[in-house]
Amino acid sequence: VVQDVTPLCDCAAQAGNPIVADVGILASMDPVAIDKTSLDLIDKAELVPGALAEDGPDRLGRINHTDSTIQMRVAKKLGMGELEYRIIEI
View 1 (cartoon, rainbow, N blue to C red):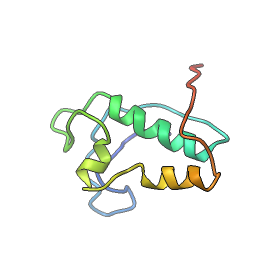
View 2: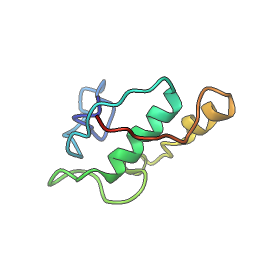
View 3: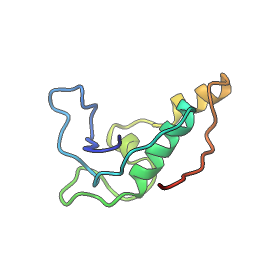
View 4: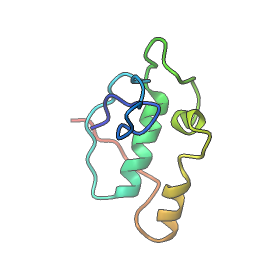
């Protein structure tokens, strides 16, 4: 479920307010593809007014001064999944 996406991990006491409107429910047998899909959909989602984010790629990475795709790229190299995905709406 991609909802209440906050600038910081929601495990943190001060995670902040959501930055985008709720995206929806995703499912996949591929953990890498679903993470990539989640980040891409967050990047395309409408910003919540007053959000601590800007339009453009890797919104969460830019907020946290990091590259959000590093772990996914390494996971792909390790054969854990693929970065390509296909969305099927139901």
